[in-house]
Amino acid sequence: MKLYNIKENDEQVSFAQAVRQGLGRNQGLFFPEALPALSDVDGLLEQDFVTRSSAILSALIGDELAPEQVSAMVDAAFQFPAPIKSVKEGVYALELFHGPTLAFKDFGGRFMAQSLAAVSDGGKITILTATSGDTGAAVAHAFYGMENINVVILYPKGKISPLQEKLFCTLGGNIHTVAINGDFDACQALVKQAFDDAELRQEIGLNSANSINISRLMAQICYYFEAVAQVPAAQRDNLVVSVPSGNFGNLTAGLLAKALGLPIKRFIAATNVNDTVPRYLETGRWEPKPTIATTSNAMDVSQPNNWPRIEELCRVKTWGLETLGKGAVTDEQSAAAVRELNQLGYLCEPHGAIAYQVLNQQLQADETGLFLCTAHPAKFKEVVDDILGADIELPAPLAKHAKLPLLSAELDADFDALKVILRQVQAK
Image (cartoon, rainbow, N blue to C red; front, side, top):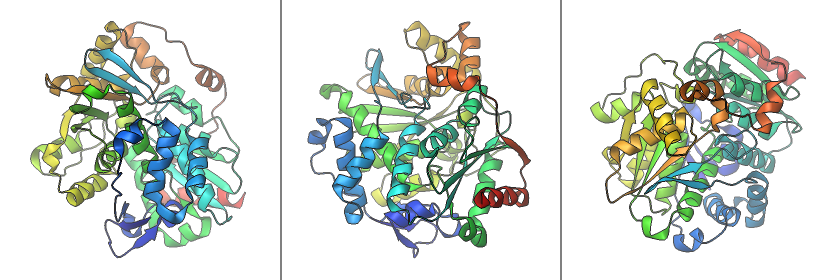
């Protein structure tokens, strides 16, 4: 598999290099030089999740890893389902929260852990990642206890749900968590500064587990195929998929699935009031505003990292950006959508409800709708309880971690101070 740096096209790397390196020069994202045409998509859709995903990922990775090795990696990573549930006539929810940390990030985090183990040269690695909520838990649990790998996770203090925080800030061991006095974009900026420091990168074996890492993104492609496989065949031709979008890795993966031949008519980018992308699609001007804290905190991102990959894919495939649906939803509107879904007999949380809300607004009479539910409602228990006047029961993984003490350090958004922590972690 050959990939190139979107910002500096002369930097070309293999899959192994892209996994180990994370980012290219000048903070450039890696993008596949060629996307394979999957010859028998209908046949793939007849296969089970792991068999199909192994075939897709082998086709992408090429001869760098043997098919049986990829199959073993997928089997180890995807040990939980991604079911769709009928919400009402012609509208389905794709549930991506059945993994160990109850969020869609489990797919990418666990496959990245398998990928890094497969391509590692045995040296010590420091994984630095920023999270707006769910990435942290998925990455922490995927890499917990792995030899020669330390994980440092930055998150905005007070801006993720208490249960999200408990799920990854109570592990200890090789998992180090840092609460940053700032928003998610400040956390993300620190990660980028670290990758721009060539000396530091070399010194601590720096890598990233954000969706900027190509292995995480590739894993996410697979559950779009799994979703379509569950949609009745007669409804697949006019399928519209609404994606709750923050850092835009999820939507990127969906568009890559379409580029590989998955029959999806169109996508909708659904955001909260941090609406840089919907405004850009409307006006053609990229004008990020200060990030606003919302009840859908995992989407509180004003400068989404993965957007350049979407633009690059649209350029390569000659898809007009105007074909993307878009919509921004307020907290009040997402709460109303949570209540509406509850009346339909479906329990949802604000991120999935945002995708449902925009899908409802834009779905046409002859279309089938699918919206992504990216986290278990109990991960946002305080918000959902308040909206519904309910008392959601905690699933076992959350109940276990809710009782444990937080182990996080606290830090201002200061790169020099972060470097001290990174060096201390590497020295352990």
